[in-house]
Image 1 (cartoon, rainbow, N blue to C red):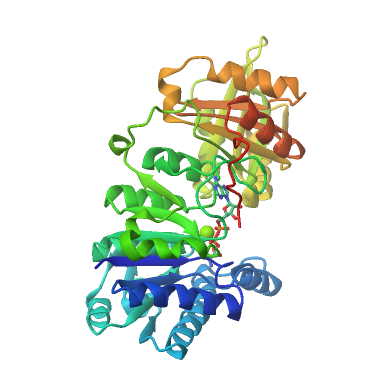
Image 2: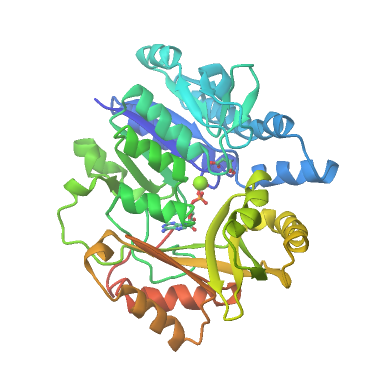
Length: 426
Ligand code: ADP
Ligand code: ASP
Ligand code: MG
């Protein structure tokens, strides 16, 4: 019988009824003789509520105290799920990240997992108990509570699966798998039965929030069999009676196993969390890029795309993107830099989005970029920035064209669900 790690997200844990549903599903797996470790998120909306509370108290919340507070969301749901399981006759025990212990570094709100002590979990499993672990949190070497960044429960799930050498890590969420793009934006998105780690990593890093990027990195590094599936989909559970491996959802796989012919484009990702800054009329001299961008990096602001153009008058313009939450801070910094180096103008926009095509098949196909650009042109969508790599092309466009762009590209690259397919999100 198998050892399974199941992770349930915020929507799946969002109400007492849903928690009871999760308990019923865990019970079925347990009754079939599988050992089950469950990782849970806070109830949907709870982490946002806590962050808003902190900002109602101060504009600059202390990161250690944020983590102390944020970890409470998951502490509630682990206990509720343990109670729900006990109420239907299943032995269950809940653990916070610190109690496990999930050891992390001390980078509050974006901590990295360094190791997991799993002896207590193994003991509980041997005693036929279901173990429930709080997602998104850990403990550092000073004993302080840490959190892993938004969406971090996915990473907890995969890290525990890796530590226990689980047979599969199942990420249960509010859609029934990974789609060619967010099905809430493109209703014709189709569900993928399989996607490679490489592509999933690219999709996650370019904004697809269905899996946190670190969970995909972890699963790839430690070869954790990883599946995304719906917690609302009850019809398919009978399948594991005979072969739980036949479960539905999307399996994240290595390229070698993926022997079907590669589509050129596997998916479309987008990121609404970006903002764009431009500094114009800068003297075009060696070292200028560093003078502009170093103070931004020194302020711990991550820069994403960068474009530089040299004008005929010998000056140069720089445009770069940052996370939207750091837009105001970046603009203020850039205005100071602009004054120091005698730039003509500094400006920015925070109503932009990045839309990206992802596919390992792009490596062997020319013409993807030109097809992308002509598709957007046909919709009268102006491209503000472009960046490419071997397996992706990203463009920055105005935010109000996001849906139109994603749907047009989805159709142009042949990703729309075929009529007759019934795959729709829960
Ligand atoms: P959870 O709370 O279960 O962790 P998330 O909200 O973090 O759930 O992730 C699931 C959501 O990810 C879906 O509801 C969907 O809107 C979004 N999403 C974005 N891109 C994709 C994609 N390519 N395939 C499926 N879902 C996607
Ligand atoms: N509750 C955390 C969040 O909302 C972690 C998670 O859900 O994965 O980001
Ligand atoms: Mg999530």
